[in-house]
Structure formats: C-alpha cells, structure tokens
Length: 270
Image (cartoon, rainbow, N blue to C red; front, top):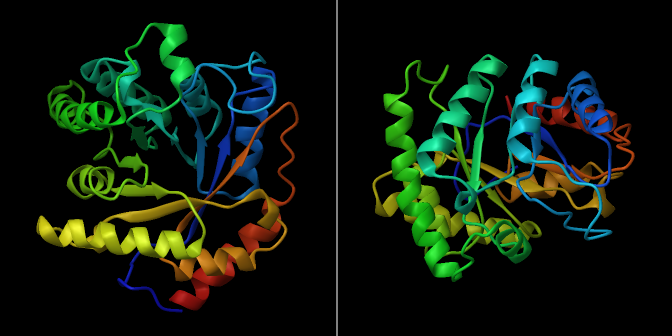
C-alpha cells in the first residue's frame, strides 16, 4: 500500500451520529454502543434543522449533546463534524470546547468549518453572506480561538486537536495547512487523493510537514457492507474513516466487520 505522502497515522474509525429524526435517548445509546463496538471517534454535527428527510423533523443542538456524550463515554474521542464557525463568538466557542474537553477527560476534537446550510442562518438570525466572506471569517476566528485556548484557566486537558472540514483548494485547504491537525474531505478515492496533493502543497509552502495532518473522509453508505472500500480510501491517503448515520433507529451492527478490518489493516502497516 502506498500513498503520495508517507503517513504515520494509524487507521481509525468514526461514527457521526446525526442529531436528527430521533430521541435524545436513542442518540445517547448510539454513542455508547459505538464505543462498545470499538470505534475510535464519535462525532455529531452542528446544524439546527435536519439535512435529510422531513426538513422540520426532530433535531437537537450540537454542543449540549457533546457535553452529554462526554459524560456517557470513556474512551472514544468526541467532537462536531463540524461546528459552524458563524454560529458562535470565537472566544465563546473556545471556552465551550475547553469545557467539553474537561468533561470528557481530554477527548475533544474541535471540528470546524465555514458554514453552508442557509436555513440555519435565516432561521437563527445569522448573516449568510458569501462563501468567500465565511471562509475569511473562519481564518480570522481560528486565530482568535487558538489565542483564547492559551489564555483559559484551566487550559484544555491537551493540545486541542483542530479538524477543518471542506475541500476548497485555494482557501479552505490553505486554512487547513495553517491551523488544522485533521482535515476532513469529501469524495471518492481519486478526489481524496487529488485534494491530499493540494493540501500537501499548501503545507510545504508554509514550511509545515504534511504528515502532521491526519486525513479524514466519509464512507458512503452503499459501501458499508464492503470493508475493501476502506482499503481504497487508505490508498488515497485517508486514515480516519467516518460513517454518518441518522435516526430514528441507529443500527450499528455493521461496525463489527469494519473494526476487524481496521485492526487487520493496522497490523499490516506496522
């Protein structure tokens, strides 16, 4: 197995529990079950309305849910995939992230993006603006978040990993190179391979080792029964693979074969 840039990161599995069309109890139980089945990370997302199904269906808020996930899990990392930068003052967001990190015992990943779902903005009174303006705000606010994290008392339990989501090659991947520990991209293996090359180039342009950034992507639902799909994404440079699942029922039995695949694949890479 080869990639364009050698990576030191182990293959990891994540479940993104969509906070839509389900009771909170079902979401909490899904987080606990995902941990028990052996995944490495439990994500949710940061929206105010469902992204699929009934647009006015049941939905819950991201960060209060993460605080609860931090209490009911013990091992997995947790975080938003991703939080909308526009929705909270960056100093407040840093404080929220630090607090959830302490609740979890130092397991938070601060996933963040520039925002894109216009209904969130319209319904909650935020200025949607333009994609370019939202990206420039993300770049500005990441620096504010990083500075606030240094000033908080007590500080986070660890150097808080920052995940940036998005695939824009000129600005998003440049922001990723400047600030992120993890990049989450979207697409098939050729797309992920191409975006990784672009991100590597941005890293080299600012004097950063590209291997410092873990590469993340989603597993399409039509591939959940075929762990060989994971091999193709790993060959494209991704090592954190995420399954997104929504309610009302969170059936996670498929994870067992993926956990076995992950362990075997990591053993081959040693």
